[in-house]
Image (cartoon, rainbow, N blue to C red; front, side, top):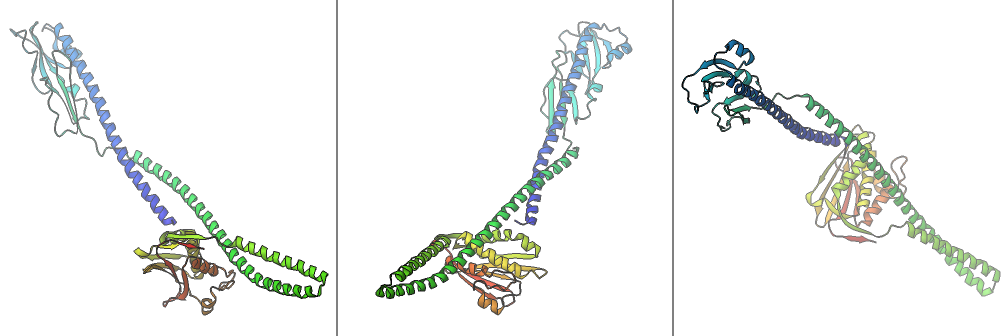
Length: 442
C-alpha cells in the first residue's frame, strides 16, 4: 500500500468516525435539553403546588373584611376578596374565570378569593406552552408537541393539571464539543495510522531482506551447482586415468607405486563424494505448484520496491484479464521472478525524468500469458543474445546472475521466458504458465 492510498484510507476512517460520533454527540446534547426542561417542569410543579397550598391554607382564615392591599403584599396571587350569600356547602369550590384566573370559594364562611397564577406560570419561558387545566381532567397530549409533560396537583380543592410542551432547539448546540471531537479523532487516527504505517514499513523491510536473502541463496545454489558440475568432469577423467595406470602398474608388480596410486584413487573418490554431497545440499527440494494470484503477487512486489519506484518516479499499471489472474506456480518463486524483472525495469529507467512499467495477462487455452513492458531504452542485441548467460550483465556493477536465476525459476515452474523489444520501444518480457491444476516439480 503506497502512502497516498494510506492517507486516503486514514481520511475516510476519520470522516466515518467523526460522522458517527457527531450523530451520537448531537443526540446526547438534545437529550440533555430534554432533561433540563424536565427538571424545570418539576421545579415549576413544585412552586405552583406551593402557591396552591398557600391558597388552601389562607382561605379558612379569611372573613371577608381584610384589607386587600395588605393581603396582596403577603399573597401576590390573590387579586380579589368578596363575600357570597347563600352558596351551597356542596357547590363547586373552584370557578374558572380565565386561563390562569379562577375564584376559590369557602362556602362555610361565604367568601371567595380571586386567584391569578399567571406570574408563577409565566416564569418558565423555555417551554413552548405551559398552562393549567382548571377542570382537573387529564387531556390528550398535543399532536404537534415534540415533548409533552402533564401532572396533576394533589390539592383537594384545586386538583388542577399542569401542562407543558416544548420543542428541541435543534440549532442551539455548542460547537466546541464537536470541534474537540474532530480534533480528538484526528489525533487518534493519525497516531494509529502512524503505528500501522511503521509496522507496515518494518514488514516490507523484513520481506525485502528475506527476498534478497532468498535470491542470494538461490544464486549461490546456481553457482555452486555449476561449479560442482564443472569440477566433477575433470575429476571423473582423473579417476579413469588413475584406474588405468593402476592396472598397468599392477601387471609389473610395483608395490610402492600401486599403493600410492591406490591412495590417490581413494582421495579422488572421496573428493567426488564430498562434492556430490555438497551439490545435494544446495539443490532445491521438490516443490508443489498450485494456484497463485498473479495480481496479489504483483502488488506485493510493487510494495517492496515502492521506495525505488517513487525515488525514480516510476508509474506501475496493470491489465489482468478476468480469466488470467491466477496461474499454476510457486508463490515465492513467482514473486522472486516478478521482483527481479521489476527491479531491472526500474534500474533501466533511472536516468529518465519519469518512467512506467505495465503488466498485462491473458489466457490462451490452458496457458496464461504474462507480458511486462517498460518505458526504458530496451534490450541491446548483445543483451538479447547473452541475457541468460551466467555472469553476463549489461549494467555496470551487476552480478550477471539475475536473469539466469529468473529463467531457472520459471523453468522449474514449468513455464517459459522470452525477451524482446516492443515495437513502440522499451523492453518486453513474456512469460507463460499453466492456468490451473497442481503440478509437482522434482
